[in-house]
Structure formats: structure tokens, C-alpha cells
Amino acid sequence: MAASSANAASSSGGGGGGAGSAGRAGSAGDNDSDSVLVADIQVVGVEPTAFKQLLRYIYTGSCAEGALEAMADHLYEAADRYGVPQL
Image 1 (cartoon, helix red, strand yellow):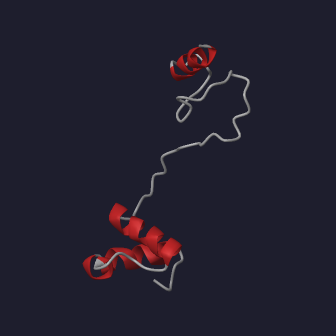
Image 2 (image 1 turned 45 degrees about the vertical axis):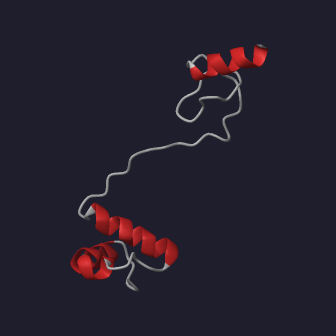
Image 3 (image 1 turned 120 degrees about the vertical axis):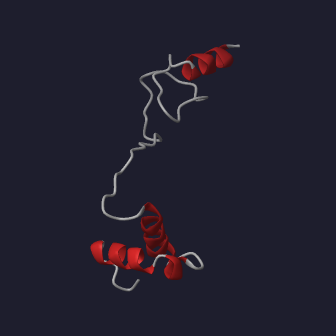
């Protein structure tokens, strides 16, 4: 019964948790080394779909099928802006 009380306190905010801590039993003094910090990053001057393809290229070495043809100008600008000449 004690474990379910700790989980209830944790998921209701009583355990000092934030995003990603629901269901973790523990107290506010626990080490949060396994926590994940999530933040929004605003990218200005690049179309979101082009930036997503740029990231895909950086991590995988390729863009989605048809992306180069569909948004060549935007991808070229993004690659130039962020120093990815091989794209």
C-alpha cells in the first residue's frame, strides 16, 4: 500500500516532479540525473520542413525521397546558412 501512496503523491505533484516524472516514486530530494530538459528552439529564416530535412541529412546522410526535388531552393539556403555544403 505504501508504494501506491508514493506513486499517487508523485503523479499529483507532491513528489516534486515535473514533466516526465509521472509514475516515479520518490521524494523531492531525489537525484534528478535521469531527468530530461525539454525546450523549444526557434529557428528563424528557414522553412520548418527544410530544416527538418537538413537535420535528417546531418544525422543519416540522406533526405526523404523527393525532398530535394520538392524544396531544393529552401534546402540549399538552409545548407548554406548552417554550413552543410555537401547537401
